[in-house]
Length: 331
Image 1 (tube, rainbow, N blue to C red):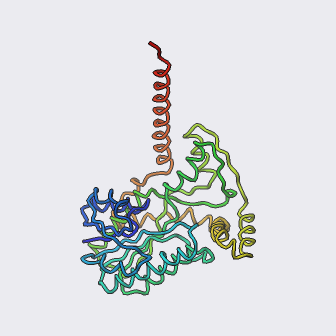
Image 2 (cartoon, rainbow, N blue to C red):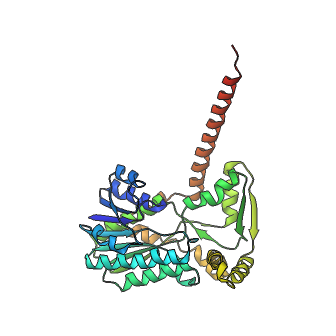
Image 3 (tube, rainbow, N blue to C red):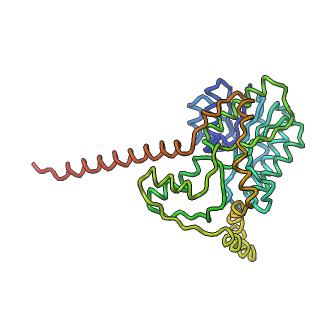
């Protein structure tokens, strides 16, 4: 099986490439900047130039490939025109090229609950592409993710260490997270199972962690592990929603409105909150023969992060103190 990975240099993409290579797959990575992606070549992957903004560069990258894994996505704060150019127009071109190239399998990483938040540009584009894939001639697997651990470092851990204010909403929303390394393992396991069993044409799989978290839960855990108090600024989601609506009154603030649109994710009712905690799908893990106990817990992930970063800070302070002492020596 030869696999083309789109979005291979991203936080999740690089983990998928690493896992595929470790499992023995032949991996080709579609990249815009070969120099910046050279670490993938050092791992053993093949690099090929391609740009979703330039659909004409896509077909040649599919030569000899049997599977496409699309994990590329832009950040929610990108301009709508750029989002549409890459996450819709470019992706549709990729799907059409895959049909012409008779690709056996197309795996797409999407966002959970995108159908409920169509006012959010990125969610709307993800849902649109899901529909394009389902209506295509391709055999597809769509993984819907709610969030992963790596994104929490910049959002919570680093601001606490640097004594910066954490801006978040009131504690009403529960979210599940997974380590990108575990997501990569699950994706690879699914590839193996699909190659051994009759393929369903379309599968939609929700990847969620075993535990739900609120913002306060994460902040409290970070405080305990770092030994520092957090500076938090909690804003009610209703206030963010009001500001978002005001930003829509002028075309000069439409970009701000799009960014604030994600506040709607936090305005969910009690019934939906209760269901979030019941979505841990044990059947998925038994189907792909994956031991759910191997899933990394967020507590353990954050503990490893703080232990490593605090050790580095202590070593750095020691080196600086030693250098200072040497400067003070007189002969």
